[in-house]
Length: 429
Image 1 (spheres, helix red, strand yellow):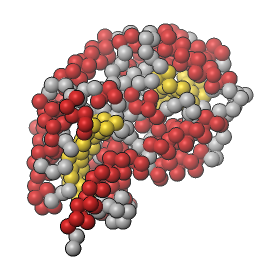
Image 2 (cartoon, one colour):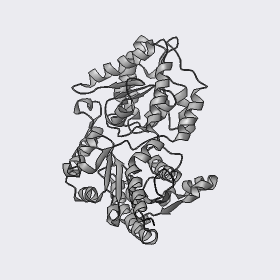
Image 3 (cartoon, rainbow, N blue to C red):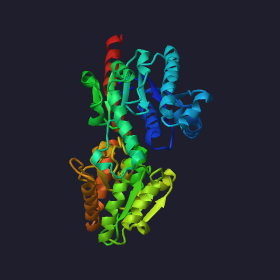
Image 4 (cartoon, one colour):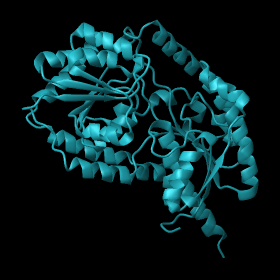
């Protein structure tokens, strides 16, 4: 390899790894792709469930043959656990033990330079790959974000209890021996936020660095730019077209977002809100919409193929994403890449990606639900009143470019590549 770095033999632990998907499957897949493009030799341990999609992608792109995929799953006796409450956590823990055993076998054959755990990305779900005894990168991991208690009133008892349990598990993570062992064995730990870093004992902070776990590939950015050039953002002459994309679950915050939209509708009666997704809060949100008198202005759509979601970004004027503890928020980046301004809360990943140049990041400190609803509505009304949103749209596209995989991978691997190149130069004849 050129540019002062040596080709590394890298093993990725990627429970979730699948092409043409969002969220964690995209994280696992993009780490493998970008490291291979960077010239490294890459091995990936993932689930057998991902095999068909991966092999289909490899057949259509021979360059992917350079990546060595190895598949592991527990027996059928354990797979039904995933359908039970908290069963996926038990399954994943046992999967990690089996994957580590496979990793040790591969390491005897390959002699890896380092191992990197990339998915799942939760700090509460530790990796055991440090047992290989080679340099070990953990993360970027997330999960330390917490919904402010003052903003949980609309949750209902089930969601409120679930979030409370999540808070308690986060506290346990601070003393969990498996988590502590993972942190102790890690050479480098990447976290997505200050809230997640707060879960890590201070004795490990010297090896901790903050970086988002998500990104867009250069191809995705180029495709979004090409499509965007064909669609001009609407001006104030037309009613604001608001979009939400994501799970329909309470902590995504659309219980607040729909009420904010009702205040926009009072000012702009022709405004519309499109909701793409599904989940347990669907009926609850529809009741909120009915009580607010805005049901006729909301279009409810199920999960759509990725291409249709990208088109939806181009057909709307703003993404409303008031998530209460989203560590990443891939839809925020995708929307921005398509030139869509974003209205979000100053919590978690969206607070990192969105700034005043490309949207509105609503502060929530010392605010109750009424305050936050009003602030969200004020942002939407301001967008409605703008003579042109083109400047915001262009700023969103430019901002999205700062969060590409091409940028993230060198940040995480730079010191390992440099150290490896230096070591090679010392032993060269």
